[in-house]
Length: 262
Image (cartoon, rainbow, N blue to C red; front, side):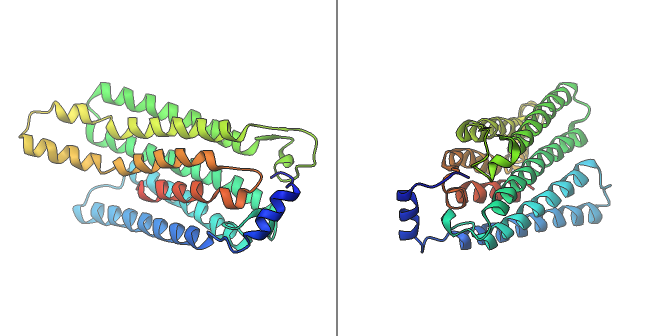
């Protein structure tokens, strides 16, 4: 959050009617509802087929809980004025702290969803050593950049409270670099996670029709790649000058990614 110039204040006052709050509420509501339905159907399927609920299922529940936290804080952000220009925020300090918390919830949720998929591969293809090693490598990369992203979210400014008190002496990371670098790595990790088992399936001895069907099932996770790519593209919109307005698209595509990744 930065100090606004006279011209920026005049611009925001002239656009007092701008409000993307309803868009945020709609995205949060729809995506979280879809996530709960998907997880519920997964557990019902396990129960009806009498298959054990294993680590991949419980990891998905962890992801759902953190996604719920992401949405809960997002709703609070809308209450404070998210979706409007920053001059209309009811409590700018709490908004900035809330946005930092959303970033943390998003990061943990996105990581655990990927871990769930990798654990599912272990359940299905556990006998294939090459694929298991690849899964561990991807898991290590996801864990590493997720920890780094959480640290950047918290310690983007030195001292930390400079993030919501711009008058405090200190320095802050370049917003564009801090946001786009982890987002780009996240896209690569999503691609790797979705495509890992495809060469193995392609090499299986089975009818072509059955093989295409299996590949199609695994490729259903491809939508999360689209959401991840689009979210990365919106990272350039992040701004300290008008955060509550400029951060709308990144917030929407963050919940689309986590909400549809189940």
